Amino acid sequence: MSDSDLKPRVKQKTRVQRPKLYKVLLLNDDYTPRDFVVLILKAEFRLDAAQAEAVMITAHQKGVCVVSVYPKDVAETKATRAIDAAGQLGYPLQFTVEPE
Ligand code: TYC
Image (cartoon, rainbow, N blue to C red):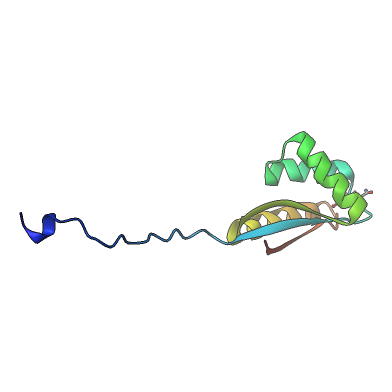
């Protein structure tokens, strides 16, 4: 039997790299229609009807609500697309992204 047939006595530790996650926050305003907020949450963030309604109402009542968490580039892309879609219709809807 050669040396290379022997099992190593020291087990190597495997470190798994988890991507840092970022929260997308929905901000309340006085002008964007509730139905449009729900529509955007369903279309861009893939929330179901009940989740979208709950997130919209929480932002409406408390001023802000976490929509979901994603890797940084995904969070920023979704927030930007949602803001742009609202802006096209003249709504001031805002989303922000921050580390979890
Ligand atoms: N406050 C808005 C209204 O009364 C609805 C709204 C809810 C807007 C949540 C933004 O993040 C928001 N029409």
